[in-house]
Length: 438
Image 1 (cartoon, rainbow, N blue to C red):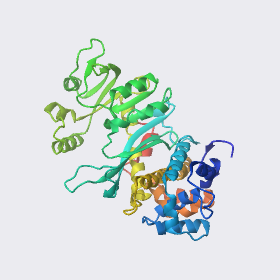
Image 2: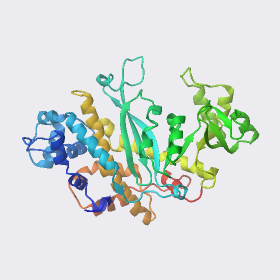
Image 3: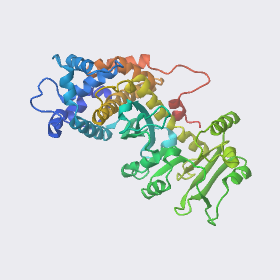
Image 4: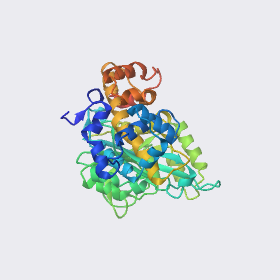
């Protein structure tokens, strides 16, 4: 296969490992040695994917899955010895290679026509055994130390693939990760992020790259008049404009970042729910003054995308693309059962990294390529394919995908069984993006 632009139906799962000479690479990294003749590094990875589908973990059960792949008897102890830092390094290299793959286009809604790549950056959490609390500290609790891993993810909605992962702890805040995406940005790329990544210096770097950002506005950040440089009172602005704002401002006294400020009134029930949550916020340092509570009646954005490209309704629509990465995270935990395969015994930081990176590699070279292929074929037939149902289907039938079964038959089965349910009053996240009406 000469072309690097592939889709699942013309590239079976093992093709990725052959293309990148994974077993040879494993030997170079020390993850595989010649004396290991019974099972290879690829066998370890693929058998772990099979193990995920069971929702239960033990090294003996994992060894059984290797036996199913290799037709050889393997002990859990022999497998346990292979899970060193070299295997984790191999997975990191393979993940990096997966970020560079080019698949057929996933989504091209009109709202993103102007942009080359559209990245959504977000994070999700996974609980770990308490013995890992020194490496992956969780939230503070009256019940003692907890352990929680955080996966920072960058999803390219154009390709339907993840463009970056970073494994951290619960206590590593999102702002710390806000600048990581800068290195891969090109001119006319777009980054969509929530408040957790709100860092003025990161916005400045995105602008210098001639790229674009869309973010929620963080209350308390200094707003300046674009002409006079005088401070602006956001609360008064919203009142004077009757809840609809689209204007040029500068952000930050020192930074002076020029961008659009957009405010849109939300339905009263949404505003009431936001205020209820704010009142119940246990964080004593949160700013819940009267002005803040009143502004919860609005959704406020900042962006450097000019109004010639996006009007207010298109800004709102583009930001709602963040829904999709949340659905992907849900599919990992509930349908791919990733959260179930963290063992309580014999866990080390290196092995914890292996479990996460092996799972993420499966997402990027098996799950998403299968989904993108099925989605595009379904769309041509007027069908919308659910990522949640697709993940559940892959989990149940993982052995068929790994053992090079007929891909066309598998995709056909997904088209038949993984459609969204018909709804008269609600549309799914994909329909919302594709629909040309805001």
